[in-house]
Structures are given as C-alpha cells and as structure tokens.
Amino acid sequence: MRAVIAEDSVLLRIGLVKVVEAAGFEVAAAVGDAEALLAAVEEHRPDTVVVDVRMPPGFTDEGVRAALMIRQQWPDVSVLLLSQYVEERYAADLLAAHNRGIGYLLKERVSDVEEFVAALRRVAAGGTALDPEVVSQLLLRRRSDPLDRLTPREREVLGLMAEGRSNAGIAEALVVSDSAVAKHINSIFTKLDLPPADGDHRRVLAVLRFLSSA
Image (cartoon, rainbow, N blue to C red):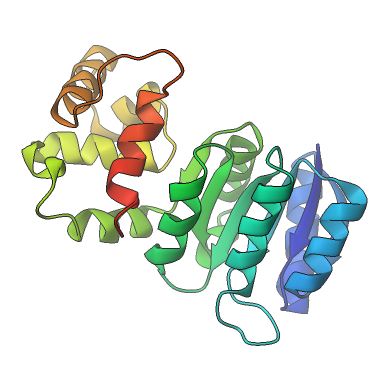
C-alpha cells in the first residue's frame, strides 16, 4: 500500500511518515500544502492519503477541498483527514459525497499510535473511521429527523458504527453480545427507513443519514 502525507507542520509530518511506514505502508511523498498534495497524488497514484484539514496558504479548508478533488479525480484513493479541532462540517461534506475509504480524526489521536494505525488501515481497506468527538457533536445536532425515533442505545450503536467499528467492536465497547448489536442495527435500519436493497450498503447509508445535514 502506498501513501501520500500532507501536513504543514514539519515535525508532525516527519512523525506521520515514521508511523505510517512502521504500519507497513510505503510513503511515496510527504508535502506541506494542498497544491503539492494534488501534484504528488497525480504523480504517485497512492492507495491512500493522510491530509491536514487546514494548510497553507489560507489555513482554512485547503486540505478538505484537495481531498474532495482527489476523490473526484481518483475515486479509488482513500482519504484520512486530520484536524486540530472538531470541525464536523468538513467530515459531513466529505462523507456526504463519498461513502467508503474515508476517515476524519483529531490530531491528538496520532499520539495513540495503535489507534491511529487501526483507523488508517480501516480507511485504506475501504472502510470509515470517524473520531468519537466528531460523532458525538454530530449526534447532538440531530433533532427533527428520523434519528429521533432511535432509542439512546441505538444512538450509541449508530455512533460507534460511524466511527467505523465492526459489530464485534461495538459489542466489546458496549459490553453486550454480538446478537444484541445485530438486533439494534436492524432496528436502526427499520427506523431510518432503510430496507434491504441491491447495491445499497445500509450500514453506510445509516451513518450518512445523520452526517449529511451537518
């Protein structure tokens, strides 16, 4: 697996390179701004990119805009966004347009190498990885929509689904059985009006349901 890293902080960029390489990825390029990121992706065609949300020159949403361009031009490239603060709008923007190979983590998660590497591998494999703080804030903003039908436990399950956890991972976090998790998830699908349908990934659609209106 090949990766490109975009982070304007030199020290953090060096650290990310070491962590990503130790996780078994080949780092094809490590750059400091969005323009260089796009050029590196075009040149190296990596499997995944790790992108800072705010980069030069404006330090606003350059990383997000570059990530959206990458997914439009090279849809097979997975994207893991890193942010200093919770900016759920950016996660929602990216997830509303794409439903696989997407992650959004706070930079403080990088210090937990095991957690960061697990998220990176999940995203690179086509899954999703959302920071618990982002998920928490998004859930708090949901009011007049089908999510109001969910019980508190179902909301917990949906939040863990949004973090990218498997049924087994949700069961472990909530200290319940796998079958209990499966029942909660089926109930979530029903309450969110997500019947079985060919070609639809209901798990992803359930997550997108509350992210898309952020």
